[in-house]
Image 1 (cartoon, helix red, strand yellow):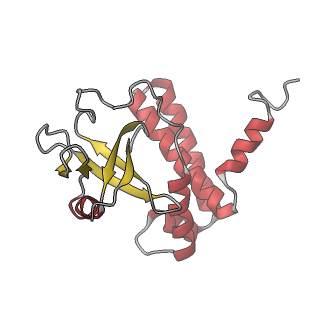
Image 2 (cartoon, rainbow, N blue to C red):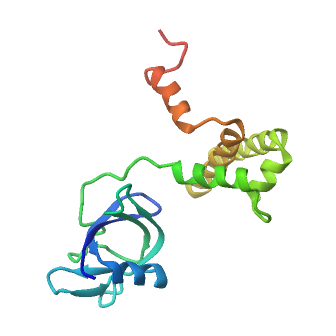
Amino acid sequence: MNDLIPAIVRDAKSGAILTLAWMNEESLRRTRELGETWFWSRGRNELWHKGATSGNTQKVVHIATDCDADALVISVNPDGPACHTGAESCFEGVPPPAFDLAPLMATLRSRCAERPEGSYSTSLFNAGRDRILKKIGEEATEVVIAAKGETRERLVSEVADLVFHLSVLLVEAGVEWGEVGAELAGRGGGRKDEG
């Protein structure tokens, strides 16, 4: 029951690492059932619900298990600082990782293969490439409009919409973002036509 595995907790929005804690079978079960993080305290030798006393709870967005099933990454929406010192993270100074598109791509590949009813991405895949391309054009225009005179938040939202629709196109075409990254890396960080 008290066989422990490490759980890396990260902010679901920024990707920043918040803390490393320990979980056993019971704390993982409670985390999954209740939707907030529960851990095993090695110092107190007991279960603890993150935020039970501080109010700084962590709403679980996703739990990933590594390939050996002996470590976890838990993505959360934190309600307050993660560290007992009051800091946002127990690892201050560690930059958040670059945004990872792999979960989005996995979801889109699933939607493309299974075509569940009621899914927006399914409706795009069903409509075909021309409809997907039309949406990319619309979203690109909205990015330009947002960049010309709207708020930062609006620009972020519109860029996210554009990236989503580009991702739909890549799945429909059987292309991965890694191929796009490799193409950019091959350009040496500059324009293709620069010497």
